[in-house]
Length: 266
Image 1: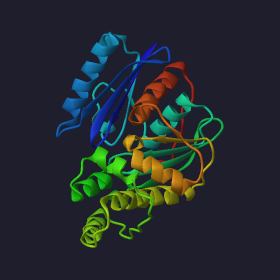
Image 2: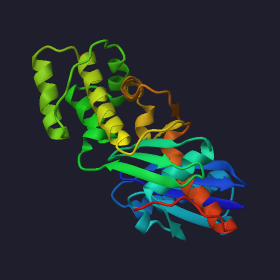
Image 3: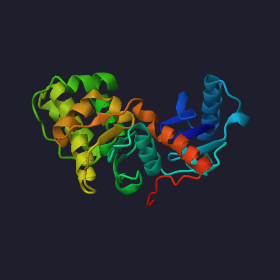
């Protein structure tokens, strides 16, 4: 059995192809201005990498903000459902998924049966997402990778009060004018993001095991801040940005075998 999952995100498009439950291809491309064109290119690249032909794919499920325009997809799944399905495929013991990507953060509570029990989404402002981190790195004239690593050098907590990325950038400039060291500012930014994400997650409850997914999982500064703020052990997923795409591919498996997949309220 061969299935595919397509995650059409605001910044990247990810494709995962499964064969008998094993990942045989992962592809990620920048979304660009024409998501449908990029999705087609990504799928062709994934098929080539997997060494399979289009007619060998038994079922395709799409997720992400652009799932409604996904080419080839026979079914669609919400971002919440895809992240949950991908998480339990990786680790059936996962009960809480924290997914932080470019535009928003999500916390998802999963039942022992692997269904979505509850979820919360931070979508009103970029201040709890990867976009916020990128904006703050630019304000400090640092590359994103440098920004995360620099924050690890700080042993001082500097509060940031702004709830909006625009006002937070002004706050960063004020801290710079006050000669606050860059590494302390970098930590303050990551601490602020972690605080918002953890606060959001606690609204629905946090249960172990906890899995961190999404592109922000690559940011070592964010992970360090999450450890301080959450105060609980968690797992960082391997290939964290591909978890929803993999979840969509598993949802395609569920469809074929007639198994009930995760349910969401969105």
